[in-house]
Image (cartoon, rainbow, N blue to C red; front, side):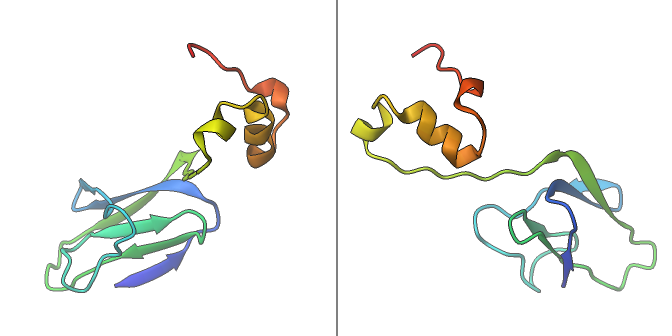
Amino acid sequence: MIKLFVQRPNAIEVFYNGQLVRPTQGETLPTLASPAGANKFDPQARHLWLVMRGGDPGAEYLIRRKSSVQLDLTLAVSVDEFQGENVVQNIATLLRIPASRIKIVGV
């Protein structure tokens, strides 16, 4: 298994012998028992864990950086706070953007 530092937090795709290998789900990292190509990317730490195996002389691994940015966001507030009049400003502060860029629709 290797752990790579990725300079930019772009989303990552891993291919093993031309087949896309989906990353492990949740907080689980691949292990040495995982199949070849098993992977997990942490956009905050900018680390990619990848299982690489020998034994197949024609094996090919391809790591592709996508043009999108991988974001994970968890926000926990009470229902009263969420429905309060400051929800737009709170979200804007969290995202570090002007409140004018946030629109509430279909509520």
